[in-house]
Length: 82
Image 1 (tube, rainbow, N blue to C red):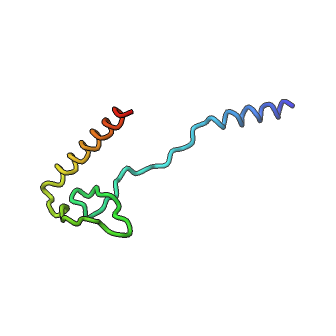
Image 2: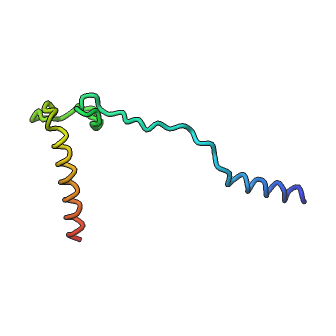
């Protein structure tokens, strides 16, 4: 009986022991065709850029920042509508 009690205590203590952590990588694998190499996965249909805006590498960072800003404004507007 004492052995069963001791075995259950050891098993319950082992359940809360931390597991060894595996090494994880934080490297971002982006699309090499993106000007800053952080583009999204183009999927099976390739990149869809009918206006050829991706060729303008100088304005790409500004367009990305403006798109993020407009997205944040639209999220605040949606919350305001609730």
